[in-house]
Image 1 (cartoon, helix red, strand yellow):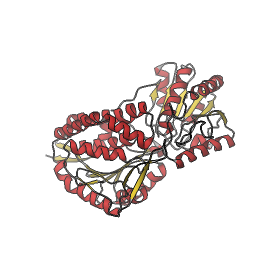
Image 2 (image 1 turned 30 degrees about the vertical axis):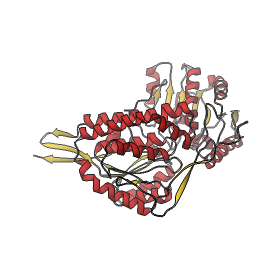
Image 3 (image 1 turned 135 degrees about the horizontal axis):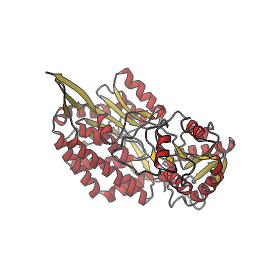
Image 4 (image 1 turned 45 degrees about the vertical axis):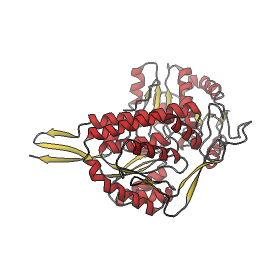
Length: 460
């Protein structure tokens, strides 16, 4: 662990094995942090807070720019680490797990220098100040990106941080700590405590010295963190589950919509909270969409284009959902619950397409978090909107229309935080976050920076 600028073992002397999802072998060990370790890290963060908060924003931005440059310089190390602990295919590990968070770090380096931390409003002077010590709890599916999406804006705002990464993918967090130290970040501004969620994560979320908890993970855990924070009147930023819809409107380019939607779902082995796991197609073109989806899914071969899921528990959970879908009447047109052929090891799940799924079915309502997409038939646009909005989630989505105006009109009626129009590209400065039970707050860009700021006004 990295606490107060020093590397250390856990106070309890225990460790956690890190397993390669491809080989199923141990590739590393990290300390199993305790509540005492969390307390030490929070104390270090509090001690470092006044100095970092008083550092001019432009100087904070210069440190983040140095971090970005060091991330780029250590690209090969990051790629290899993510491959070892997550099993991501090399190209995806490079482009998405490495280059994307490096770019995001750069946006916050720029924002630290650009953001108006002070403004005049009438006879008042309004200041935006750091919220304080941030407890960041990150998931395993995009280990470095999720770390950067929390740590970078917190540091840009002048906050100090205690990070508890997911126990399945903690090695890249250690590498990130090395980079921050090498970039000249003062001791105690960033602290890393590895450990289990119910131990280190809970201790961090409940610690009275933490001013804001930023969590990405399941809605169930997010509820518990929100309840604990509410009791302490503590701020939270929660990025939770999703069951996003890709709505293909009449007149849209059906082959492109199907292929891009499947690529979105199967990326990262389906382990993406914002994945468009429900494909909605009008009744007239539904059968054609099923054929296109089945053909496209066959190209995602496990062990090649499709990596494993993170662990055996997740593999079994996803396969169980596929079986549940079939039991409830879905038609398996690609993939299925059986183990892939010719792969003796690895936590693989076949790229699966379930057709003829009812909107209220379990597989259409619950987050599966694996390479599984469900196809749902709708009768008209109002029916499509009802289905798209018919879950407890509202994180992301896509709309494919015959023209931009038609697609935008539909997207504006969706209860979701981010929608891609006709295959719109990822924007690292656009706010990301959900409606309903998909979370509270936003990440990325100026909106993400605002989560780590509080407002003070002086009247003259």
